[in-house]
Image 1 (cartoon, rainbow, N blue to C red):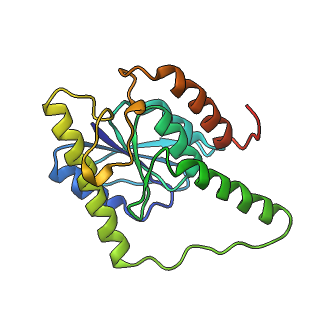
Image 2 (image 1 turned 180 degrees about the horizontal axis):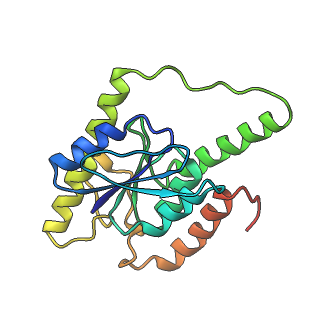
Length: 196
């Protein structure tokens, strides 16, 4: 289990690194040349400024059970398809039950902005949001460690705190065929296509 951070404009980099060090986990920051980070306790990978270069590099690095921190809904959808645990900077965990509606809201916001309209921006960050993020990250780490110690796939069963995770996340279960259809639909929405 590792912690992978989409570090471009991420307000919780230092909190995530501290928690990774506290738990003895590898922490990897991915950023482009416009947002260079260099932090003790984390490895930094700097990529070119091409469109979505950080997103594609991060998705290709994700292994089953890794924790990904991002505020990008499209990236979150792709990481879920690779059996990662995905968390945003406010402590919200992305999962099959909320990713479709989040992608739809992103798409609607893009349509409004393209037509000349305005959408509400994020509010000022609070200390409570930092605490919520730290608590949820610790829960995901604890969950993953417990499952690894028992030799169980960390995506196959869930603790009470993360009861949204369904068994069909796991490649070892018998619902792979159902997942393939859902993953194609999720990837299609992540890239903004209306049809598969």
